[in-house]
Length: 423
Image (tube, rainbow, N blue to C red; front, top):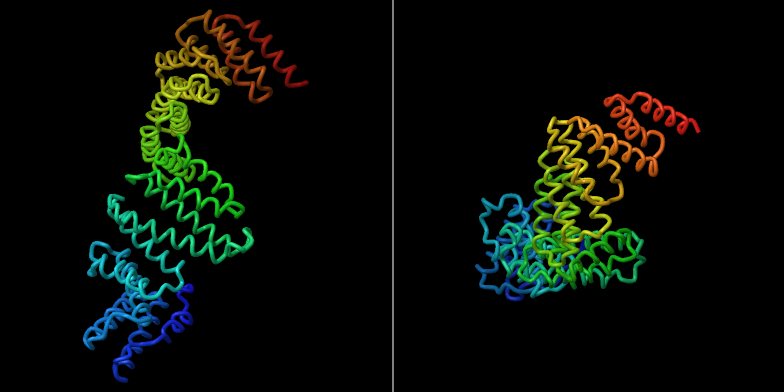
């Protein structure tokens, strides 16, 4: 509503009032209307709602119809004010949401279609918040929320489509597009018809291309087409990624969201990628239970797409992390078993797996295998690392050589390492 500026509201209020009212009634209605406007601009929602109710009662008492520009103005003020009151305390809300909140604003729009972006945005937000309150289980609310949010989006785009995409005005619109996309994702997550959101979100993303948030819009554009257009899977996948990257949600909640995504993902390779990401995330958590789960997720990904290089690396890495954790906590048999699994297939970075294996074997006195695998880990690491990154592999080999009575060989390795570092 022109940013709800008082000047804009006052201009709307100059339109024709009830023709049949006498001067005293017109003066009273004008006073109530102005009180509603003043309270609304001051964000005094209770006072604005009360004034709007008083205005409607005055019309009804005088036998005047609920019509005209003044009524449309006050009805919208009342509906929006009551919505803000509802948001603060839904449980103690004393009005009827359908009649006094969205109903009032809908009646206003039927009479006066001014400032469509603002009014449709407020209405769409009201429907969306009520839908969220009902756990996204009301199809009618979902449809109404979509209708008004899309109307707001299109109205604003029509107003500024000629503006440079890097302008402040278009940047503000791009932020609204991101808000719309976020809400659309939440609705698609629970919707009976999630595929509808593919077109809607992609249309919003197209409007955001070239803006300050172009990379984000490109990401969202692609993700709703994930799994061959399986929108719910793509939405859940992106929600999980966003939760993970924000770092605020509990790890279990992040993994539960990814689990939802995996469950509805149809493509074998696509599901494998979800499991790969779950493994990567879980393996980076401190609790031992997550490291155990990371291996399980990686195994699932590997079974689904065994030739995928990134999945092989993640599988191997998750095994390394778990074997290392087992060893540090004194679970030596488990450390050995997991290390043996980690060297059962080739993957980039498997020198850490041979490191784990050699140390576990040495702990059980398996001299030959410990020495062979310690040297293998060292040689593999030499092909990839130098200096500080290579040192742990060299030291592990030296330690195992000394453990099994080969001090001269250990000294040779140390001396060669010193020469390499010196050069």
